[in-house]
Image 1 (cartoon, rainbow, N blue to C red):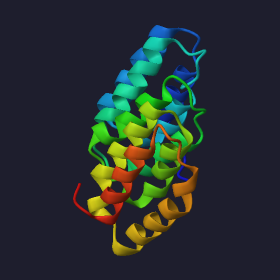
Image 2 (cartoon, rainbow, N blue to C red):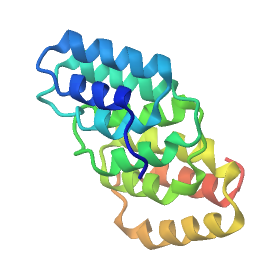
Image 3 (cartoon, rainbow, N blue to C red):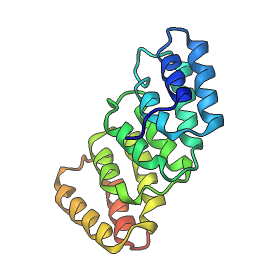
Image 4 (cartoon, rainbow, N blue to C red):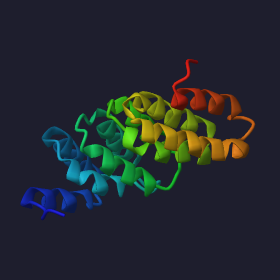
Length: 173
């Protein structure tokens, strides 16, 4: 990993502040200067104990990112974020960003399977937006994953799951 710049070290230090206004100002600076290397530090703030305004600012920033290289940081952050109230919003920010998550569709299938209905809808949206960019190998891999999970889907999510299978396999709705 590249060494952190003086500016990045300053931002990290300010993100660790106990003062919400310092953290909000820092998030704004990171947004304006477009530094995706700060994403892991922002995801670390996605805890129920963090002030709601800070969490909402981070979710908004993630939804506005237009740099494809940020995708691996975002997916890593999702995988390390404990599902809670903000998790659904973080997943929604992925499709709202318009970034290509096709390399990580299996992660979103897992999110679809393991979370509540609303989070599953958001994961479905990410998959639906990204599947057209997936190669045939990724599509086959995802179809196999879905086939293996078909018996484990909850009754509530079954209609949505059927639609997901259609989307992933390329069949019309």
